[in-house]
Length: 98
Image 1 (cartoon, rainbow, N blue to C red):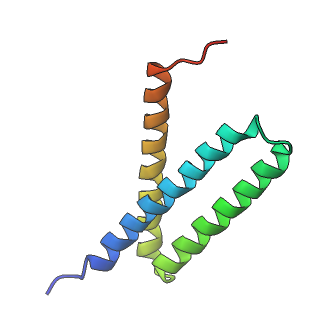
Image 2: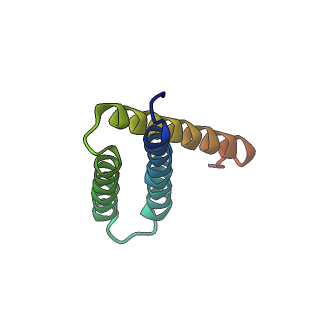
Image 3: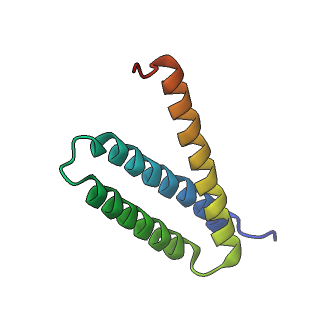
């Protein structure tokens, strides 16, 4: 019998999901900064909430297993790449005029 890849696939998928949530939260925060009466408080609070949710989610999914941590982080990095790619594509289609 081979190794059970289910938990590893779940760890990778969870990393992607957590990363997409993290970067969606960042995107929403950046969009709201200019209208916020307290932009610094918004930025710091957003970073704290996103970071705590990410680390807590990674710890929960990985269960302290190094291979699961690694796959969660790989999934997170993939989500980062998706976020960068999608914002670059949007920027090319709708450049900011200034």
